[in-house]
Length: 171
Image 1 (cartoon, rainbow, N blue to C red):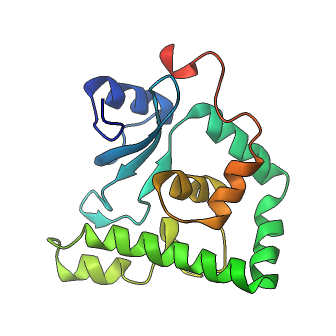
Image 2 (cartoon, rainbow, N blue to C red):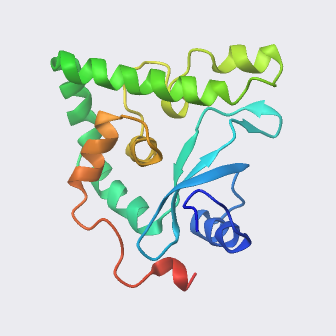
């Protein structure tokens, strides 16, 4: 099975993972070793309005692990690193631009006002490309395929990358 193809079972699992219906899923760029969705890519419109979040972490295990990193203050720590490290800052800004361009390329058939609204917005709606906002967004971006150095840091700081007992198999 192509990791990006979406089955009816995938949709049911994602809905249970997120505890809500997902927004127009385009693909599943990352699955766990059990074959369950870890990250989804969604169309950047929701209810007819621009919606900037392209990638979402759906895996309950990773959502919990990322929450632990946020509780440790990693957002503020890594924002300081961005401000003090020119190479990191450039790579992070480039990640915003890469994801913005990817998202906006999906909107070629949408009205001009939609394109204009998302034109200068980065990962997950971030306007200041030197801020982080949420580590879940960064991890989703990285696992979705964006060259995101903060998302990579999140991934590298998660010791246990997936659950042992397939939580999503019993959802």
